[in-house]
Length: 130
Image (cartoon, rainbow, N blue to C red; front, side, top):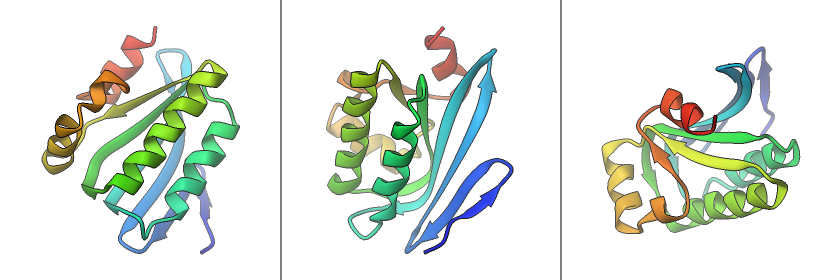
């Protein structure tokens, strides 16, 4: 499926999931934000491709905005975990922000915060990286 390039990045809509990527200036430091909207599961293979493409750019901070995500399965969580490890090897950091209540519950159940920081907002995530 072709990606639409806008001035803010990439917007790709796949079955049940919309993935957009933007690069923002957060307190003087660039920050890449991937926003997930819809449902992230094993049927959304392009999610993995979008994350890998951003890791290849070696961002200092990659933030995944989960505010529009209504469901996440173990496959999508494994994509996020692989992304975290790849960024750490490059000296970068992954942070999760604004999980919806249903996604927050899943993240709590697997205790993801032991490995990946979860913040209520983008501002708090970028402030923690300074």
